[in-house]
Length: 482
Image (tube, rainbow, N blue to C red; front, side, top):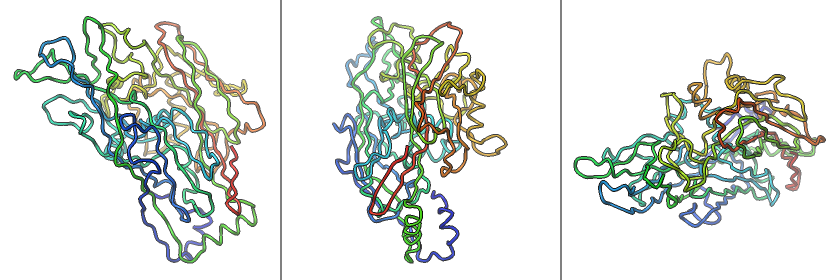
């Protein structure tokens, strides 16, 4: 799991004696439960003090416990739909995080971007290989939503009662935990604290029960995922499903050296350079609602290194209570509880995703980013060309390994469309090579162009990734250079 030691340490690796590593358990400062059903919307944890920790090993352990919509009618053949079951969202814990922020001694290390789950979804869709999704992440963090029918046994993504729960572990966090080097001596910092703001009940994907298609023994069945029940009054939208995270705790690796070599090296660096430098990524999101296939979203950042700019679109659609029979379930708003959205025509890997993480390209023909009116790229890129830009940004051409969760151009167009422009030298996080916008009143635009046919109400998002520098001085002095 751990990255190699920093190069200056590796040079003296044959002199390091007494190296040891162990894993410690951390408790939240406030409560071991969180989520709307538990009445706690925030979780805070502090890192071990006077220790060398591996940031990339930080993991959250908990039990995801849903609360289903109560039964309203149990008469077989009735047009009333009796129960709505809460599912475990795809990507598990990270899909439930609204905001994540780090601080040290009261000094904010990032801007706490919202919604965080969109950032993590983009990284999972575009950077994580499918084989890892179907192995590591499926085991630890429920990376797959599967179909379910009543009577075949309880599937781990669906819960028959409010007492059911499933264990989850999240061991990847976007932002400060991606720092380089990943080994951090907390003895040189004030108290390092992580705070998470959890999403509301609308983040829970749901599955409807259908009592109009009964089995021969009269028992009730569940509609297939992606289907929405229809009545003469329209679509019945639940508002009662919720969730809680229980028995929460954290784990992190702690490293030690018995000969004091690392301490001596840190002291020498600070005496010569004035501070230790820790490089880590930050993210920001800007959004606007629109109803046209041609439009623009604008944002601006002041940063020493603008590394990437992403464009995304999510469905907004109709307000609750205005649906009519025959409405496409894929058109339901990401703001409401809904059945999982089915992927495009691909039958490879996971078939369903959360509505809030469905990024589509309907009606758009081409796009272009602009930074202070300078175009990136120098031409209008096509929708499919955006995937080539993504592959090049990830250094995947000529590589025989790796990939993403995007398994066809239909999945790219309908579910995972995430155009990106890369502005930095891709490689080690230690490189600070992006566009320098510190002394410029920067303006970033994502312009998209379409035919104007079948406009889909949408939320358009502009996401940026930039490098920040944490300078650690003597006496636990800190300075953050964005």
